[in-house]
Image 1: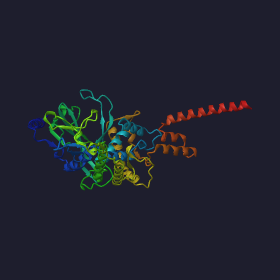
Image 2 (image 1 turned 120 degrees about the horizontal axis):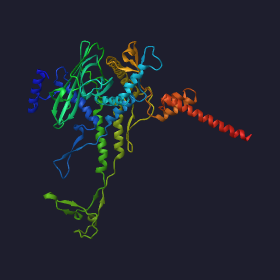
Image 3 (image 1 turned 135 degrees about the vertical axis):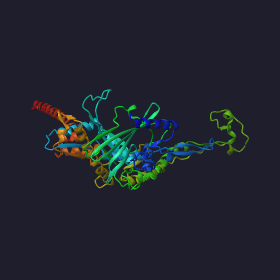
Image 4 (image 1 turned 90 degrees about the vertical axis):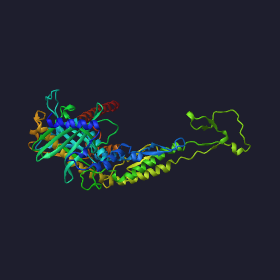
Length: 525
């Protein structure tokens, strides 16, 4: 540790002991003043996505026993999460693909083979879908690439490294520089709880000319309740907690960043000067709040609408309260002993059933009305999201036509994502070449030296009803417009090898059956 770091550590330890000088991520030098945007928007969208936003879901509750009142938690439909999940499935599913092709490459392109290995090794198919869902909710997210080299306890390399892909939510990433809405520099914030402290690593990605620089700073604070997400604590020596993490890395002659910021389609009308995106349900907050109120009312309809019996006051019994509390009055339905009441009026002796009729259908009608409004606000066709008394919140399963509003919204999101995914592939190959990684006995540097192309294919059919899709495939095969192998690989999920094996087995069975039939009819002649 240098003299500067030594004194910096001493000062921070003194500040930590006095519980002062807590550092906010937006107080770091070089970080834009985005605190208000994160506090008023991103952290609010995140709370709604998780299903509990205190301003909405903590409501007062007053009872006879507690006239001063307390609070209860409002039931939530979590329609915001459902909308983001559905949008993510429309944009990214198992039929989407990212491929690379070398110039004059053979049929079995080794560069694409390496790319598919990296994507599979990082669970990209499912992990990127999860990131998309959260990005639609929080207004953005980030992909990050690096090479992880296995090391021993002394920091010595144990072999060839692997390209890793990180998936970061908007609440853990802050852009620090951008050009024409494309983020070029930023910081990643990751927090870990250990030994009674929160340890927060701030990873900076920034440029010095054509030199790309990655620096890591560590901050620490005691675990005391729930600190805001943007609070770091005090600076702490990095090597004491993460000895293998480099505090400063420089890479020369870099053409693009080793991270990509992704965001939903749509202008940021909350901050014109920011490259940050907006949640897809940002225009629909009042609608989401109303849906939760109606859903909570529907649930409480069964609580408040339970059977009510009106009994004469003279038939009530009184029991002493606990610890001097007010007495409890109750009607003993199990008491079958005759009891005399001081009245001769028959009407005063009657017990009435005063149960109310449950208003289930009006609630469901109101919920579906607001869901239609929500669909319009986030770019879905009416009816894409609906509520059913038995199935709850559900999504449409019909095929979406190219003329639909949903199709147009999905295509707009895809167009924004495509550039980020292409940049991600470039970053993967650049890192692999710099670290000398190989594939099938050849270096990645040699594979990309002659140039290559990157293709991103989305699933434009956006089909939810799998059975209808398979039925159309069967019709195409029967009409001779689609091969059986392509039908099995594209629609049934077979690998080309499995499809060949299955088709061979089917052919053998058909030939066997044909021989048996011939023998049967031949024996009859």
